[in-house]
Length: 130
Image 1 (cartoon, rainbow, N blue to C red):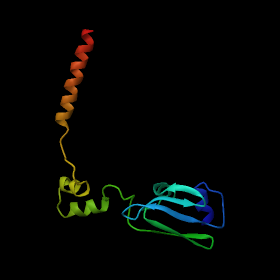
Image 2: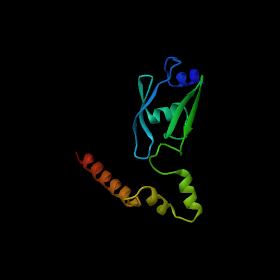
Image 3: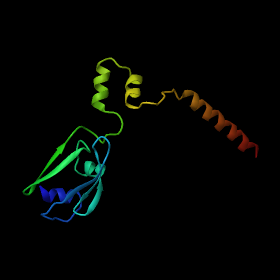
Image 4: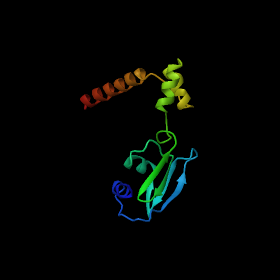
């Protein structure tokens, strides 16, 4: 209901609902919108209303609301459903990660950890010598 909507957004009740989308991403997800003169991030509405997507429209129908969502998530990063589908088709985790995060490099961190540990040990020995 409209009353519940306002409560979840911490807005005073107003039978006149005015929603204006101020900014959308290149994938049509709401980045910024105004509801009765108060600005919200799309992700704020996504979280406050427990929506499944930030690509949504809100329509007032009497004292009720109709919220239509397209897709899932906030449009940043990896689709869990898409990744699962790729895994079921036999793709490796490296191929799946490279699909969603192009221009990245997957590395093992063991050598980095050992380097940090060695540097820490040097600093510890240096501190003991003081």
